[in-house]
Length: 133
Image (cartoon, rainbow, N blue to C red; front, side):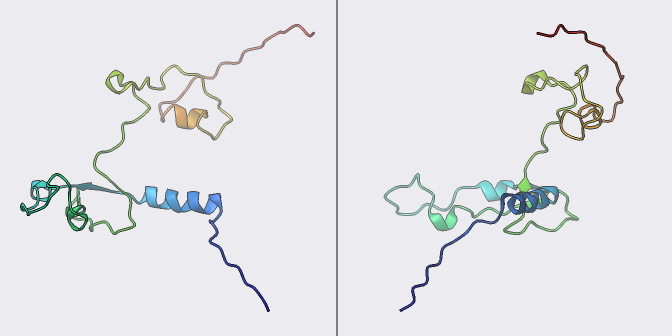
């Protein structure tokens, strides 16, 4: 007698990351209208503060730009743009990147192209003499 066992398997971390990045790049800005936020009609419910499951997602997301199509069930959406990290914003606790040291050979987050936000940068060469142990 043969026994067969099946189990669910997660995709690779790289493929999940790539799929999320694709959705992030295609995210749509949306808005809610005031009509969508009105409470549902009263019911004879023993727990009136609880929103019934069928009414929980009753609102409809509309594109911020009327020329764009409405988002689908698997699309990523956002209500407000994220604040930028380039400019200082004390209210949000963002120090900005002006005056920070960067690595001109790096393509990562410490690289000058990304960190300086297209403003340009000055290169400074330093020679350090250290005593050997």
